[in-house]
Length: 556
Image (cartoon, rainbow, N blue to C red; front, side, top):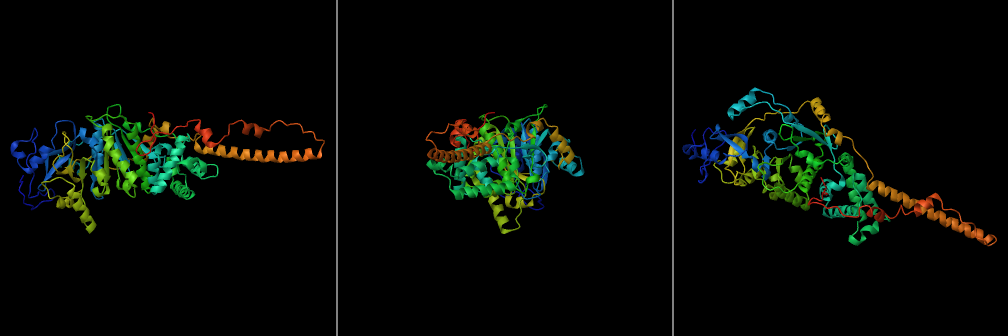
């Protein structure tokens, strides 16, 4: 294979005249003659001795080199990653390829299925001419294989085991993001959560939160927050209106109990393979802020509860965050800081996060800086903005033997530019590759098969039926009823006093015999119904410990 810098007849993998910098170590199995040229050096820099995932074969000078395999070390998957590219370039198949190899290596995987076309990862693939040709091109021994999997849905909307969170566990920062609150309103919501935490008011669902907000601006509740800033009626109105709009989108289903235990995502199958958890989102794909923020709750909950483990030979879980641009669109500064901190720190807990989006510019720079593994599919340059984004993407790569600005617009479907972290933590040379074909079904499983898999799961009986136990709404309603009873009793007592005075004034001067207290007076006088702060504060009376996202810390 010619390694000249001549660009003629180049389909992909056009080399740059600058070539590759010297100093790339050669690996076993690559002879010195081959290693002397750019293609050999790239292959040597991507050859690893330990467990690794096979991504595909090197593209160089317009040809696919099946003997030059590009891999990613298994131990580096918790260094996070980015899969980017224009629509239709093969991003979904790339995550499917990586996910099924992780499962084979005993690593659990979480996938968000936005369009409904990832469910096929649990079923064996179907042989065909295109698959056979791809396997031959990249020297892949292709065998149809499905992965062990579980299907989930947000609150039971759509097929899948319902995933729910309590409002308390979800926390104020994430909820502010999904309600699109400004900074002042976000701070006020944090104050509301603080009050609920300290008084032991459990916010299970949205009606609980609504009840607390309404109480804190009522005549009875205004004094509760007076010492720490209070809650204005205008801000409370904005929050209540946002909650109403949120509920109109069907969000009522997502908050409640039984609350999903995110440790379910860390399971392995009986044969040692990692379970692939697929969150089915087609039914809510028109509510992007909702599902993207809910995915962040899953990650934040894992971050909160998992112990520190340092560097492992393989991650405990790899989390794929599809349509990642939806997460960051319109996000507050506090939210972005929380995402950055979570991504930075969750690595030491054995969790890898891959963001999947169209261009790297969709991901904030501070987050992008944490992503050590990158698979960049083709980009388009049809408009001036596209061209600007292309140049910005090229600048984020290290020095390369390719003319990346031209290459990234010429890649075909299922081809990508890759750079990952090697076993020593250093970036590998930039490599253009033709990716392997997934061995699982490249498309959705039939609806009947998906429903059968969901209903037969041992988790179905645990999470399927919602539970509505006593929480803030019921307690506030009881207190309000008690307050009304006290007011009625006081009014009745006052009226009785007036009547007694009149009777005494017109009678013999003797006092009327004292009557036994009525049932209402006995209940009110029993102390059962006292002020909301006292009655609930004595039950828990402590603030919930929260993470950087304001999510509640829970015992496993």
